Length: 255
Image (cartoon, rainbow, N blue to C red; front, side, top):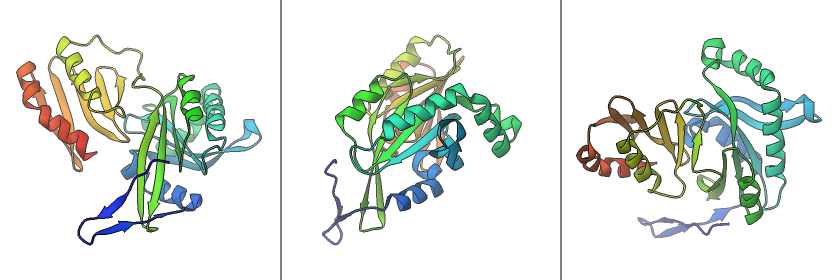
């Protein structure tokens, strides 16, 4: 487990890590999934009848309207990765079942905008090199996120690993302009944990949650996270981009 420490500089107190009840962590994340992960939850403890009544911990969709499943693991060597891949495979082979669930929760109009090619978020108190190796072998977007609990009241989430840097969830992604490629490369260079998700002529960049959108149309537009809203910047040329680089980095730092 990564050796993160939480220190109160005002009182000079080092907060102690506490063992966490996984059921409590699961409940907290389910109740606060949008604030913590950018997800809207559709179902908890979803039973998939085609696999001996196995249970998917959480099913939702993210800020890019991509179907997302969340699985939790206690300990470093639990079977969560293999089980999760089995669940993804089930969803891919039984999309009509998932469509019914989404239609029931959202209504047909909203449900039709959800991409059924699922991504996986695996949340645990630790991961190992075998987990990273396993998810490298798959074509899916998978995030490994560690949790740590301090003083039984501070929950820390840390992206430990992601399977892909770039994920195109829409088949008709347009050819980018030279300027948009420069901007995208700059954003991806901000950190190893940054992931790009492309759909149409829109690119979303996230760490755990989205922090910037790039719209590559007749004119490039950036929407950068600023607290609970987004600031919009029009990019006409390389000089505009250089002018707003600090804003882009600030959006990255805030998330």
